[in-house]
Length: 262
Image (cartoon, rainbow, N blue to C red; front, side, top):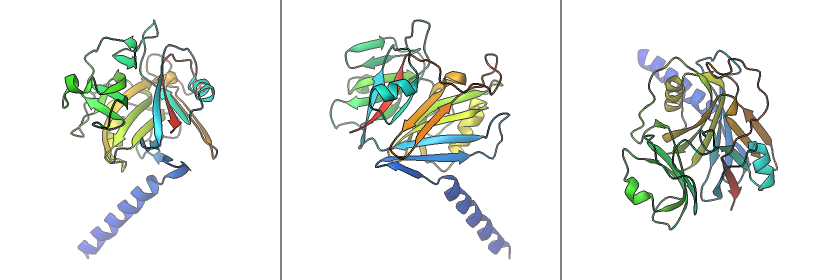
């Protein structure tokens, strides 16, 4: 009887996971999922939006030093999706290393251990990856791609939560790789402590390999546009900055990652 009960429980968990990871087709190589989080946030619907992208079918582009919303950038450049490229300084430069072909937005690499790399030079490396500088050889990989954007590591290549505990919470935009090599653009309007948010993603059924922080609070932005649907995701809450759920407009940001059909 006890064994039967356990089997029923495991079946229920599996069924729930399948329901939570239901992907909606947007177009070939592009799917979206809305993940309902059991750990409720203080604001909004406690739902995480995940856009799954097959990098074999989509190009990744970096737009620098232009104060525009992600929606403006998408419409002006025929993109299917746009998201923050990282936190920025007063001079619109990225907080860490950022390079796009011959343009150095910021030539200085800081202590953060995650670097998104794309626009590869040859097929000796994946089309897109999040380089973990603790577990990978940056000196080798820094010459393999045309485009790089550095930010804070959230999940390392050993699937470990590497964000320290803190009481502050905020809306978040981030990027991840799954174990099949897909790129995941992730947005959550509902504020969470980042250590808790990372645990939520680790415990989710999205098979995350590693994950990198992009932006938080009202600046956290994700825009998706295909023939099937338009999806706008806007952040709001940030401890000690904007402690409300009232922001419903995209903020202007200088650096953006864009996705375009090959």
